[in-house]
Length: 123
Image: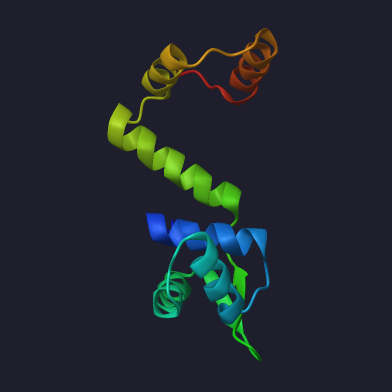
């Protein structure tokens, strides 16, 4: 699957869909009105953009929406973009900055060491 860039409003709608997979466009519009404050037209416009991008598909009857990208995949793409944009693609710079603001437990540190050992490569 190609990389799909989701903007803030699109992510908000995707969050609703991930939480309520298989909802109709009408149901999503009611949820978006309640949780985000969007009107029906805004929700339908965002749905159409997400369909065009290949992030969701619709099925009939009832304009039922299904996600084509997982929350995890979207999060990974956002993280990659953040690291590339703000840290010149350096995981070391990202973690150094992140860790200066947030402490982790000894258990979390050990889990991270294991992940680095498992996925790390030299060269």
